[in-house]
Amino acid sequence: MKRIFVVAITVIALAIGTWIGWPREGGPVDPTAQESSGAVAPGGQDDFDDPEGTSDETADDAAATEAVDGRPDAGDPAVEVTAEPEFDETAPTEPVEATWDDTVRKAARDAALATITAFAATDKAEDAWWAGLQPLLTPQARPVYQDVDPRLVPVTEVTGDPEVTDETSTLLAEVAVPTDIGPYTVLLTRADGAAPWLAEQIRPPEGS
View: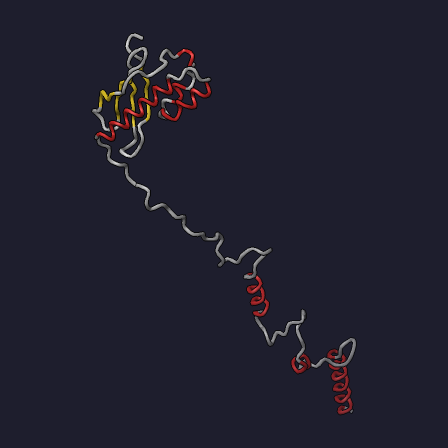
């Protein structure tokens, strides 16, 4: 009787254990089934082949280096380098030393004569009169004489040869030009020894 009781208890225990381990749907669960079948982890990535997901990171890094919207990569130059401009090596880089000699004196006399001749051309229209005088004046003198009415200029002609009356400075000169109302004095200036003489002032005869 005791033996029968033990056997009954054992059968009941086995039945309970089998019922607990049995799945609700399908057959018994085999814990080694997933390992032996080589199942692929969710998302389609094989965890055994790439446990750290390095394949995705490598693909992302490669995509980051590609050009975006046609723009150059980080290593490409942003500005196209052009050739350096060419310079005229024959052009003077320093002012030419100014001196006095017969050639310089003649140039001063000729500049003063041209200035008074243009200034005395009062028979011309105002625009034509200014067009003849303007190139002979310095940039500083042009605004002074631009508004002069040639009809009010008293001199009408040059009556003698010009004469240099002051050559103290190599960049300044005073030249007296005889006219029909007396000698005009023209103050000339130049930038250096190679620059032309230009009129800075046109002074009428004293007392006129």
